[in-house]
Image (cartoon, rainbow, N blue to C red; front, side):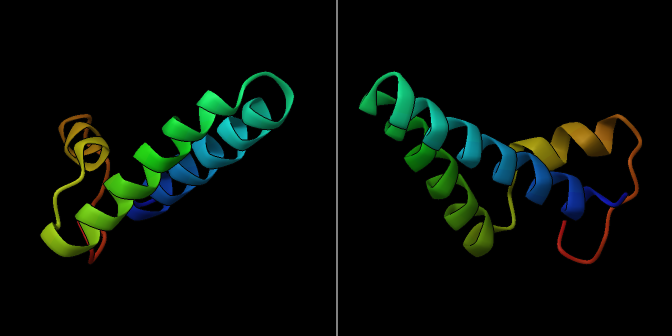
Length: 66
């Protein structure tokens, strides 16, 4: 798997998990959902993604976006 696919999978999982937690436990979990969305938005404009940096250092192969 390339870095992009891992980043998208992790972001999608975080959004789903936090939405489920918000629906079942506390609406405060929506702050985490917003944080993930904001991070995806800023990475679209800047090209910087903390998870992509970590994955590069771990030796994962980058794709065209990161």
